[in-house]
Length: 211
Image (tube, rainbow, N blue to C red):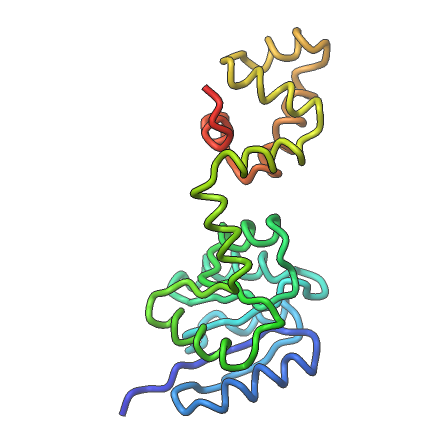
């Protein structure tokens, strides 16, 4: 007999938690293991347990679901994690994917979509709601549009610094040119990298097609 796929959920809204539990129990291939109302409890009790898939909300009380996934992936790298959330903003989406989330489903999806997403994630796929998949596609395959979106979220000072970085200026040279301290330059760059979801100058420049 094929072993059942074991699933745990982290959700603070009782009605949604119940819907997920009932959906999981409706398919004989799956086994509902446990439900946690917050990330802190989940992080305490899940490591070491025998589960295959974690379904987690993002907007949890206390620690959010993205941070939970990032931390639990460090302890259980093979655990498959799917976000189940109302948040469709880019900042939440890309934070979640970067943290190690294997799928991203919005809460307006019907139960049958949840079932198909569980099957997909277990078979090696990355299930996403259509609107979320579109955002990911645009991010990777429409760089000009993405660049414009990023430029809009940067402040005028951050845009100035980005242009100078692209021209090869060092932090001190940027500081001298803009009449600010090196520390202030570093603060701007740190915030800019967070907004752009990059880690260094090269990634930032590549994201914007700046040569």
